Image (cartoon, rainbow, N blue to C red; front, side, top):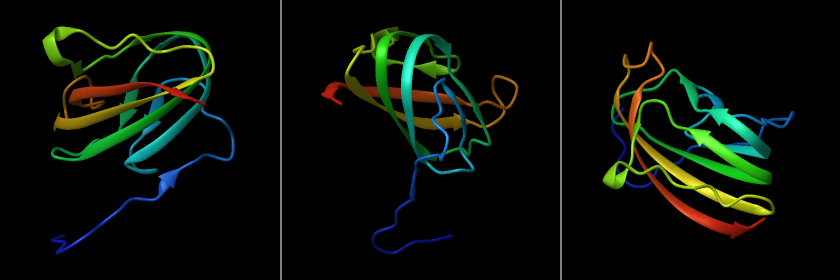
Length: 115
């Protein structure tokens, strides 16, 4: 598909809150995760090489994330902001098949938005 001009993906806000870091990219390139607290491991399905994915993480407590398959600047994953904050994670997929099909990504973050 070639797009001349602007294109967008519908923001995926599930009817039932997603409270872990498991996403299916077929739902949307932009997904909201709410009520996030505790320890979670990022798991994804259906990635596409070259795609950009965005996660908004609305947190209700302290969150420890393990980002399987994500390379971060200076090899340092972000420390999520915690209770009452929303963090935005941007991922660019560079392998669809890595990590048993969950993909491999370059990651960046913008942190500490007030929820």
